[in-house]
Amino acid sequence: MDAEERELLEQTLRKTMSGASGPVLDASLADLGWAEMLAEEPGTAIPLVFRLLGETGAHASVLNDIVLRETGGPPGRTPALPYTGGLWVEWARDGSADDCPLDPSLPLRRVAAGGAVPLAEGRRALGWWLLGTGRAMLALARRHVLDRHQFGRPLASFQALRHRLAEAYVGLEGAEAVLTATGDDDTCALLAKAAAGRAALTAARHCQQALGGIGFTAEHDLHRHVKRALVLDGLLGSARDLTREAGSLLLREGRTPRLVDL
Amino acid sequence: MRTAEFRRELRAWLDGHDLAPGDDHGLDAQVAQLARVRRALWEADWMRYGWPREVGGLGGPGVLRAVLGEEVASRDLAEPGIWSMVEVLVPTLIDYAPPALAAEMVPRLLSGREQWCQGFSEPGSGSDLASLSTRAVRDNGGDWVVSGQKVWTSLAQYAARCVLLARTGGPGHDGISAFFVDMDSPGITVRPLRTMHGVDEFAEVFLDEVRVPGERLLGAPGDGWKLAMDLLPHERSTCFWHRIAHLHSRLDRLLADGCEPDAGALGAAWLDLHTARCRSALTQRALAEGGRLGPETSVDKILLATAEQRLFDTARDLLPGTVELTDEGAWRTEYLYSRAATIYGGTAEIQRNIAARRLLDLGKE
Image 1: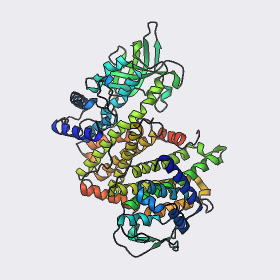
Image 2: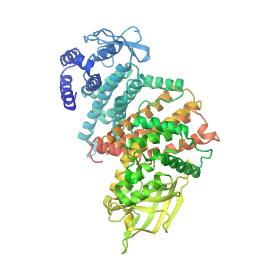
Image 3: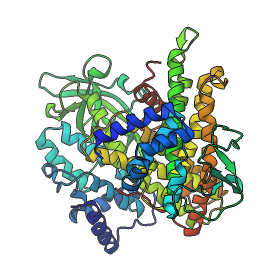
Image 4: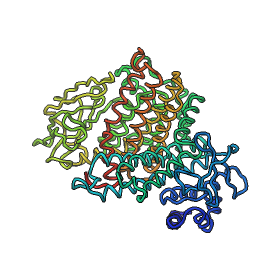
């Protein structure tokens, strides 16, 4: 896929996700050739689709496809997925579940403990999703501080808020670098999801503050992204879990792996 | 030469040539060790890769210098801060000095025969560098006469030359010019600064009617600000890579020193370092592909400074009492030095101002 085709695909996906979510979006993605993209150009398709899910606030059951692709099992199933705290969930494909109390729009339901599944690809995909969610929150906060005036000045002119948004931005840029630079290594994927989860939660904190009262209302979109970030962070291991796992690896090996090189 | 091949051959060479420093960790010894390592690497050609032939180099991509610096830092052959100074000084000479001057001088620095310094900050001009007040006036013979005071000038007491910023015109950016000054010129006094980490690597430089020949002007009158801005991409690519390599070696040392097994804290320190490393790798790839680096390198700077302070905070937490009470002072010195990471090279606040203004496009304050 060249740059122009990629750009076109991004536009199409963004438009599709802006108008549909859940099973409807699953169907649209199937029509757009999701299965073929995943088979032929996973390196392009996964980052793009998952980041755009975050940016648009839509959701689809595509995480199942990523995990199944890695296990090599038959497509169409809904594997049990580990959640933080020793819990397990599944991502219903028919949109029927409404079991996620924090983010009820997600068809995520708790299930009995499942078997071990390979997690690297799923973590990387969720990392891109969290990155997109973080960028969506930052875009909302940025618009708000430019538009709203207090004390006769735009909020964007106050350094305290500028630095908060700069902090959110730096975290997201760092996470994108980690997601981009990763190879096929499991540890790279683990660190990538940890970085993305942490960056999304940092963005949530600063953007919530910059948006003030309006960001706390149900009518403003921010809370949807905040809740999405919290739920996705726990899936396949939270930033806290994964950071600790990374530390355990250091203690086991006694040396810091250099995972990217020039 | 390809990067991987260069790394492999360099490692083999370093394995066979013992350049490890001695037991004396004082600043004199550090600077002598730096010169020794440079001399050996210059004579074996490693120090020449990635620099243009016009200044004694062997050509090839600049990324080879990042690889060399990483090996030097990882093996603790030289202190990474002073090792990296050539990365900003040499490109400045190449871009702004008359070609003959660059060809004559650069090999002296790269081969370890000389140290140079960089006279930018002043007592009244830290974050607001463009307000600097050291003055250079042209006399009838075409020479310049420079008077003023510099501060935070690394290695000034060892330096043979200085890339110096001084005001030749009116106030603001446009009135600043740059000079290549011999440090043995009459009228220069150097006084090392005592700092909190106990290594006197920074100095005050007093300039009292110092005569600088006309041909030592770098660029044209008024090019000083541009020169200062042009060196940022160099500092924030190769130099950062060296520093990140150094910090990885310190995380290794923390593990080797039998730290408390706090997996969460160690993982967080590694995550910050890994993030800085990934970002720096992308920055250098962009540079290698001919991209111009701009305000986005403030992200690299913030990530690095944050990672550095977190690492040494973690070391102090997980080796309790070591920074405060042990006789062997490596952790103490480096912990204290890390406090400056959010101050030098543009403070954390200046970097966030740049991110807000230039990267998030939030308009003026």
